[in-house]
Image (cartoon, rainbow, N blue to C red; front, side, top):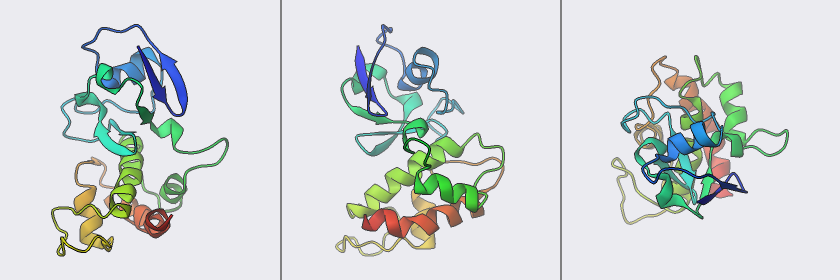
Length: 169
């Protein structure tokens, strides 16, 4: 089987019951994506598939063959951090850092959702696709990613500082 991960074609001979998370971590040694609850509740395993965020622990790897998968290792380019990664550094958006890869992938995916005008549970105007990434919007959209250290203020500040650029680009 083969996958396109971080822009590279990767192959592995795996059991068809292997989760995408286990493929990434155990078979392809992409350990940036973390295994938290392994039940889809914490978001530590969030990756992007064709730009959409998913919980890799709940996904079977076989379902995502030949799709574009982006892990935290694939967000930046060469020696340059992705703007959201840089903002996390500048705003101290992590403490232990365990949830950080999932938070980063989720933030990038969320920016894409906003750009496409996808409403959240707190979006007031469902007709208008020009959604303002307010404090409540941002927190609702990131609610699937838990930080047990409580670094939410830094995470929210980091995302807010880069969101306008991400949404407009």
